[in-house]
Image 1 (spheres, rainbow, N blue to C red):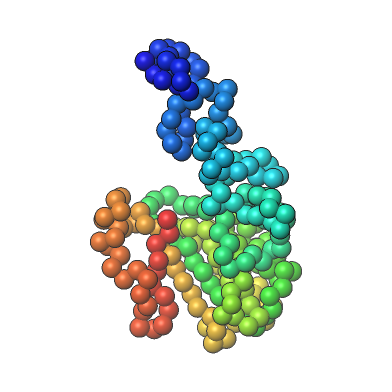
Image 2 (tube, rainbow, N blue to C red):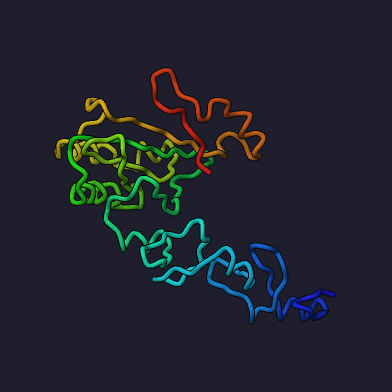
Length: 225
C-alpha cells in the first residue's frame, strides 16, 4: 500500500493515479503535480525551489533563473532574447557538450583593444555559431575595451576540427583586437570533472592543484560541473 496525500492506495492505483516528485521523491496525485517536459514536482517543492519562465513557461530552478527589474524569471534561452549580445561576467548558459567522450574542454579567451561593442561580438558569433552553438561572449573587468570569448564544453577533436577558431581569430584581429600582445588578457581552459574519474573522491584525488595558480600567472584549470 502507498500513502498519498493522506489516502492509502494499492500498487495498481498508485501507478495509475500518482507520480513521484523529482525534488523530494514524495508521491502525489498526478492531477496535483506541477509538470513540464522535463520536470514533475509537488506543489510544495515547486513553490519553494522553482519558477516558470515568463516567456516559454518552462520550469526552472530558482538558482538557475535570470530575473529582470520587475522580478520576472527567465530561462537562459529566453533571457538571451531580452539582452544584448555581450553578457555580464556572471552569465552561464545551459551548457551544450560537443563531441563524444568524457574529457571536454571549455576555453575562455580574452581579447582587448577592439571595443566592447555588440556589433563586433555579433560578427564573431556569426562565424563561431554558423553550424552549432559553440561560443558565447561576456564582459570582463580586467579588460580595457575588450571581450571574453567562451566556448561550450568540447572534446579536443571538436576544438581542432569543428570549432572555427582560425576564422574567429582572423576576424577579431581584423577589427583591431589583441590577446597576449595587449598585456591585459588571459587564456583559461576548464576541464570536465568526469575526465578525472566517475566519483567525487576520484575526481578530488586527481585535481590537487585546482584553484591554485601556475608559475606563469595564469589560473590552473578548474573543473566544470
